[in-house]
Structures are given as C-alpha cells and as structure tokens.
Amino acid sequence: MMKNGGMNILRLNLSMTPPETCRRVISCIRALDELSNFTPCVAVAMDMTAPPIRTGIFEGGIDAEVFLKEGDMIDLTMDKAYLEKSTTKQLFVDTSLFPQMISCVYRGDRIHIGDGLITLVVQTIGMNYLTCLIEEGGSHFLPQLIATADGIIISRADLGLQYSPEKIFKLQKYVISHCNVAARPVFVIGQLLESMRTKPRPTRAESTDVANAVLDGADGIILSVETSRGIFPLETLSTVDRVCREAERAFCHETYRAELKQSRLLRGLDQRDATSVTAISAVEASASCGATAIFVITTSGRSAISTATAKPSCPIIVITRDPIVARHCHAYHGLHSYVYTGPQLEDWCEDMDLRINTAISSAKERRLVSAGDTVVIVIGSLAGEGSTNTMQIFHVPDDKATLKVVSSRNNLVYPEFCSDAVEIPEEKTHQRGIDELLLPI
Image (tube, rainbow, N blue to C red):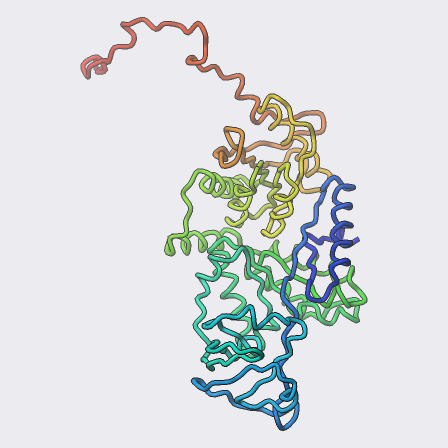
C-alpha cells in the first residue's frame, strides 16, 4: 500500500530496528519489486546513526545547569561513582552500548556533546577515562561538506537544538540552495506532519510547510514518527504526495534554472563534458517545445542525474537494466525509474529502440505520457557507459506504432565502410581558386 501510495524510498533506522527485522523488511521490498517487474521500484535508505552515548547527571540534580569554560580540561570517565555526581572536571559517560569507545579514540580526535553544542578535543587516553580540552565549536564549511557528501538530510529537530526557532527557515533555504548548486540530493525531515500521528488530516500550517520545502528546491520529504508510530500512515503518505504534486505545479522552473546556471558559473561548478551538455540541452529543449517527459537511457545513471539537477519542468523517465541504478535515481527530484528486463538483442540499435518503446508503453500505463505528447529522448551514440551525446524530440505514437530512434541511423550510408566505394573524378576534387567562385554580374 505504501509503495503504491507514492513512497520512493524506505528509510530504516538501524539504531532502533533489530537486524533481523531489517533483513525481513528489505527482503519483502525486493520481493515486491520483482512481483511488480520493478514498476515502480523502491529504494532502501539506512539511517546508520549509532545509539547515543548518555552522560551522567551533574551534582544538583537532573535540572542542574553547569558552564564548561573554553580552554579548561575535563575528564570523561566510565567510573559509575560519577553517574549522578558529575562535575565540570569529571563527567560520566555511559559506554554500555559502545564498550570499545576508549580503544577507538585517538589523541586529537573531537568529541561532540549535546548535538554539537560542546566540542571536546582528546588530550590523554587512560584505562577508563579520556582527558579532553574544552574547545569552542569549530567553523563549518558548508560548501566543502556538501561537495564531499553523497547527499544531505536537513533535520530541523537537530537544527533547533543549536539555533533559535526564527532562524530555522533561513537555514533550511540556505542548505537546500547550496545542495542544488552542487547537484547533491537534499531531503527535509522533522515535524512535517506531526499532527497526523493521531489525526487523519494535517493542519494548514503543516501542509504549507511541506509545500515550502518543495518550493525551496528539496529533492525529497522524509516522514519519521508520522509513519513509524502514527495511526494514519497511509493518509499521511497520501497527503504528502498530493501537497508535493501541487507545489511542483507552482514551482517556477525557468527562473530557478537561470539562477542555478548563474550560481554554478560563478562558483566554477558548471559541467562542460558531452553528457552534461546534452542533459542541459534536453532540459532547455523540453521547456521550449512543451515536452511532457524526458526519456533517458543510462548505464550508470549519470546522464539521468545530470538531467534532473538541471531542474526540468517535466518528469524524467530513466531507462536502465540495473535495479541498483534505478533505486539510486530515486534520490533526485523528478526521476522515474524504469528497469528494462527484456532480452538483449544482438543488434544494439534495435535493442535501444525496443527499450525506448517499452518504456514509453510503461509510461502510458502510469499516465506519465499519452499518445501525441511531445517527448525528448536522450541517448548515446555508442554502447557502454559515458557515451550520452544525443538528444532528439519525438511525438508519442499510438499503441499501433513504434518509434525508430536509433535503428533509423542504419539507413545512412557511409562511403568509407563500403567495399566498392565510388571513385570521384580528379577534376571534381581540385581546389578552386577565388576567380572560379566569382559569378558574372
């Protein structure tokens, strides 16, 4: 039900879910993918955050507040005598969930307390304690962090621990815009539809919050307690699906593409290889001709991702043989994966045409395109990865016709491949002078 309701990625929290349960859920998802012939397929994301290491209680009780001064030293001790008597010099840490912590830490490593509010630098490693220097929170270089990461998740709950509420919306927009410029997928999580844990409908503020995340440029919305503990998971998913679709219709793609292009040029992030240029050209062509969809045949997924990060106003159908590539593409906005499971023909051109026509038939069934619609097809001129360099525009045929996208090139004749090439007379091949090109007045 969740799969058919619009779920693209299933998120599993490994710190709260037993391994056997994770294996059973993943096996179930993979079995459903095969039963539906990967139409659509569902990706699985692992939340690998380890269980938290709890600190002890300071003298004065659970509500006691202490001030850790920058530059002072503090011992992180495993001595349970400090469990309820921690001080600014001796802080108990519970390592029952991570008993090997001492052996995994090195001098100079940083330890963060309170979701990063306090940063400690390890100075000395003892048998059951760590002597640390209290350091002020270091600088965060967001562009470098995004460039290194495969994707970014914006947790508003975590941001709320370090920033005041009035700044959260600005931070969300700031991070999303940087991810869009760097062509990295970005997701928003945290109290999106909190009221739907117990109610079948969201508040107007919550639905507006989801829509604004889409309008900011987020690639996806992550639901957590709303679907894991809520009593209306299907209604929650359906609400998010409807709100996101409505927000996408209001998204100003042309303006956003122009701003993205300018930002990437200023930062030296514009791509000029054949695959990227072809993808950008396909997006511009789709806007000019009012295309209903863009079809991309890909081996590695790179050409499809390049197309998606250019923010087209129409859906992108990714045609691939690899289910792993298809699932990976779910992380990017606007990508609809189609796993081609048919036989591979010996003639590469005919094989490509068969994949395209099969994908178009599937897109018709999913109501992504209809007969007579204009579509853009992105493909390579050669077999293999990294050869995407061709963009063509077609009209979707009816059920009785098929497109000839690649195999039509077989009708072209190249003299250098002919066994009996025609000889051109010598007098026709000499270079003419400027006088021979002048016509009488």
